Length: 248
Image 1 (cartoon, rainbow, N blue to C red):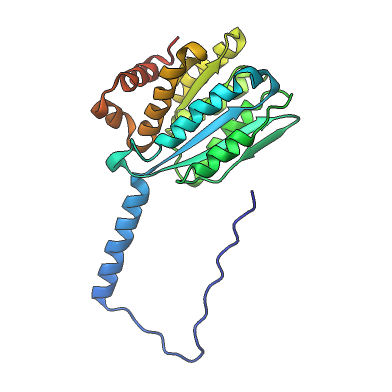
Image 2 (cartoon, one colour):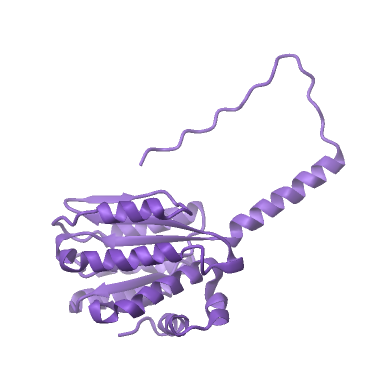
C-alpha cells in the first residue's frame, strides 16, 4: 500500500491582514470539533487477519465466504454505535505479510480477500500481533480477528504480544481451523491473555461462526454492552467465550 502524502499548507494571497476569530466563532468551532471527535470515537476499528499459507487451501473458499458475510454485515449491526473501520491483514509464502488501509466501505476488501491465493510458508502470527500493537498505539483498535490452523512460532513471544494487546484493550478473537493440538494451545492462550475468545472453525460450524463474526463486529463498535443489548444466541456465545477464553 502506498503511503499517504503529508498535506501541504495552502497559502493565501500576500499582504492580506489576518482575520481574527470572534469569541462566538471560536465557541462554534469548539462545539463542531467536539462533535467530530465524538463521531469518530463512536465508531470502531477491527483488524481481520488471515493465515494464507498452503495448509488452509482446502477450506479457503469456505473461510472467504464467511468473512465476506461479515463484511456485508458491517454497518448493519452497529446501530447507534457508529461506522466500523476494517483492515485486512494476511500472511503467506516466505515472509510476505500485508495490510490494507482501514476502510468503512468493505467491498474493496472483499475483492482483495477473494483474490488472495494460498502459498506455502510458515506462520507469521507474531507479525500480526505486533502490527495490531502498532496500529492501536496510533489510533485505538477495538478488536482483532485471527483465522488460522497452525502455529510454528515461539509461544512465549506470542504470549507477550497477546498480553500487551489485552492491556491495551484489544481482544483477539481466534477462529481455529482443524484440530492441531499445538495450535489450539497457542490460540487459546492468545485469546485468554488478550481477553478475547477462541472458537473452533470447520464446515459443521460454518453457520454459527458466520453469526459469531457479526457479533465480533458489533463488539468492535459497541463493546460488551452492545452484545448484551442485542442478546442473540451468538452474542451470548461470544460473551461466554470472552469470559472463559474459548468455546469448543
